[in-house]
Image 1: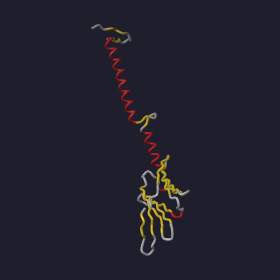
Image 2 (image 1 turned 120 degrees about the vertical axis):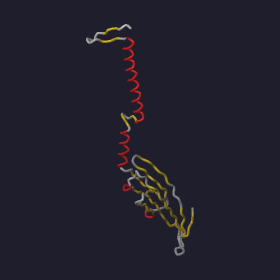
Image 3 (image 1 turned 90 degrees about the vertical axis):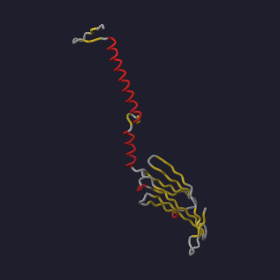
Image 4 (image 1 turned 30 degrees about the vertical axis):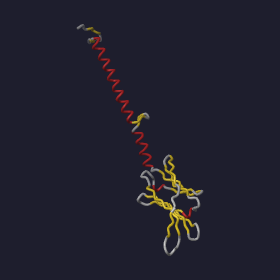
Length: 165
């Protein structure tokens, strides 16, 4: 922790600290949990700006001239719905919920559908198509080989004529 004097006029000592944070990823959203035991809701601020930055800061008084404070800035991911960001403070934990945009969710789902055929990914589909092509070529080759080896010819009436060479 670092202690700083704010200014000559206030004579306050600020103790800057880095709170414990953890990320939780759930279906359709990311949650940032920050451990801020000892703080009150009124002592915290959560803001976003138009540059895609989430600012979180807080300050509380420890004594007559001593304060504890923190300041965090986090870049908001581009798949996040900035207008849907919510903050909740309960039992000393600040939870910031960042939902993914609907457009991103639909695009992701559409991409999965586009890249799948009966639940098979595109690379596997290509492999299956190649294998099916090889099987078809072998079957055709086998048929042609039988006709040539047996040297059978059909006349106009469907009768088989064996040709001796």
